[in-house]
Length: 149
Image (tube, rainbow, N blue to C red; front, side, top):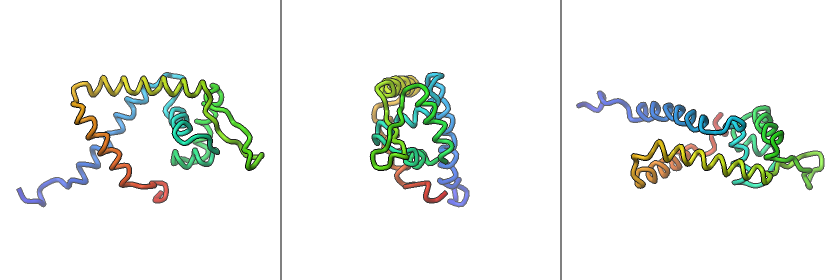
């Protein structure tokens, strides 16, 4: 077969990456009704990066401040996150993950891990590890996507 006849490898990759949306929707369905995916991301970012301002959450989520504000408000309303005065600027607030937020995040982790284990039960450990490595590499290849928006 002539190379011109072969589908472009990046076209095939684009189709598979687009199909990841179905995986993400499946993961979102495994979350409890009181914690949509945007709120779960807020909790995960606060656990990973520690206390931070709303602007930093927006930056890490790569969304507009109005979008991240809705997600943060949802977490605050449920007691998972609290807004504390910023010692460097009393007019600003620092977002802090509460004990309840850590408990909710642990529940989310258990649910997502169980869902992945169910759906990938017929995968070998090596295949799961390879996928994890390749997805991390793919993400790293894109660097800071917000800079190109």
